[in-house]
Image 1 (cartoon, one colour):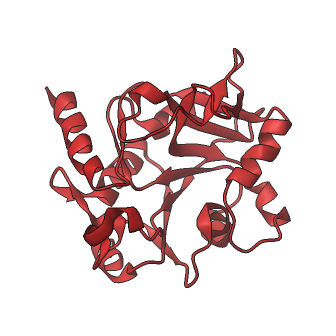
Image 2: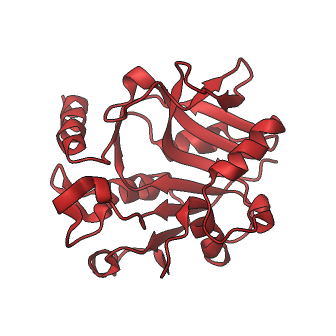
Length: 231
């Protein structure tokens, strides 16, 4: 029987510096897109997928986010010092529990299939990581040629400048390796590289659209994507 995740880490602690004045008084997940905060777009996916436990990490200007989430079924993991994705996930492990977990970035919007359902359906016990991807040409708001290549068996390797697929900020990940990292603040890239070397990191192409909302211009792109999906 597959060991399926039932907990999710929602990353919401970043400084949002690329958003300029939009994050002067609020964290990036509170920026409105199509009439509601970015984090609500992410939480709608979590709720639709029926995930039992959700942990949201906070750091920069946490008060508006804390107030907004007060009546939601989430647990907060505050980081007095920013820990990056790996350190933040490790800090939250007591709240998430054992076994593989979903992770989801809070600064994007999606159309099409629910990314978390896609990941759950594609997960198998031979995997240490399953990342959701899109061809670079289809990834709205994201510059560059792509992050990964995907082989015939679904395993990923680094694109290293070659045309490839963009990581969309949604994955299932086994967390056992986090304990072996000496640094307090570190990126999940450290785990991915070890998993790639062992042939245990896999990718899945999202069946739908996606837009990165990491810069101010990404707001209009995201709203246009959502409008097209509603037509």
